Amino acid sequence: MMTLSRSTISSPLVGRGQGETTPLPVAQLILSMHCDQPMTAPSRHVLTGLDEIRFGRGPTRVHRDPTARRLTLNIPDPRMSADHGRLVRLGMAWAIDDTTSKNGCALNGNPVRQGMLEDGDLLELGHTMFVFRVAPAPAGPLDVTADQLTASGADLATFSAELAAQFARLVNVAGSDVPVLILGETGTDKEPIARALHAHSGRSGPFVTVNCGALPESLAEHALFGTRRDASAGAGADPLGLVRSAERGTLFFDEIAELRASSQATFLRVLANHQVMPAGDPRAPWVDVRICAATHRPPEDLVDSGGFRRDLYTHLFEVTIELLPLRRRVEDLGLLVRTLLARRPGGEHAQFTPAAARMLHRHNWPYNMRQLERALAPAVTLAVGRPIDLADLPLGRARSPTRTEIEDDDALRGRLVSLLELHRGNIAAVARAFDKDRMQIHRWVRRFGLDLETFRR
Image 1 (cartoon, rainbow, N blue to C red):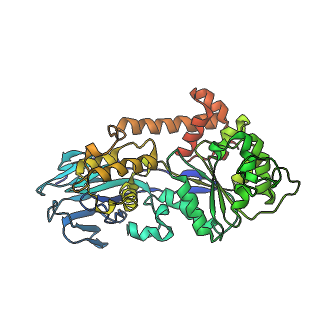
Image 2 (cartoon, rainbow, N blue to C red):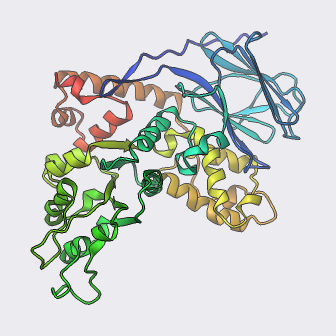
Image 3 (spheres, one colour):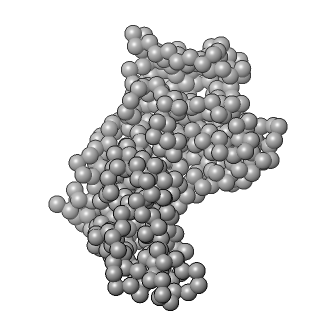
């Protein structure tokens, strides 16, 4: 009989701005990875309406019994027992109870027979990895596989309800000509999301990328807006320019915050009037392009500092999609690994040792998807004919947040809200109170889902 206990998990609705609220969090179990067969589709199981989840070895089977309030998961893992323990509800919390299986289980890498589960915990049964989440309730079925999430494309597949809502907005606006701004930390794969926007747009023209940070200042306007054929723009100058080369397609400005101030005014004409002004040409041809931009820097700070035109920012801010860093979407780790392996020669035959799979799930991923991809690429090459092990992964020591860090996070949110209320949403004043720069305050505001306008009233 279980004797474990813990306080209940509860959370109020959290404001997200524009009248939206984040749904109350619910317990979810993600079958993230089969170490021996990582190409097998992961699955998500919402634990609403359940009191027990039973695990066992056998052909893949998901059976939800609403009368008994029980979910049964059979998994084709030869290292699992026919009866390999269960999860049980204790009030609003969940616990692992495995007193009979041959190999036992591990919680965050530590062998256990019984233990309480917390948000983000990694549970190992045999060679199968599960992630326990307490997160906003997802839309759709209570039990869903990764293959059922790919209707909008692999790059838009996610088990995160928060990210799924962002992707749904992107698909909904894809058919319009509304500019879209994609925000996210470095390495969160903003360009593939922009390509997904183009794919869903139905536009017949090409997808053209502009790397704003790589545009030489002296030739930026020539590169963007073209030049009259007899104008002096140097050898190899494109008379059309990047903007007109995207005619009837999508023009993606990567790291838009790096766009030179001298080019911003002309770029505003493209957004507002669909016109370009080629160098040396008094005419302003009309263009049909869809504008998408991305940045890892809070654009509000750039506007406040004078580095970015407010009118240009207003045009770009019509629809904003914010990508989550990888550390905040651990439920997607197995899904993302599967997607990346499918793109690597030989990746479909890859396997992982439990230690390597554990590191992938518990690493902090400071450089996000880009780092995950670069970790898997050499590992697949090195581990031909054997499972990928720790030594094959070019990663530092893995770590996951401690309970103290989680509690500190709650304290930080409380202090941030208090100061925003005191200073009526004035970011500069809050930054001075924290002795931080304004960019950090904006990051915290987005991280905790706060709406600045509610503090400015």
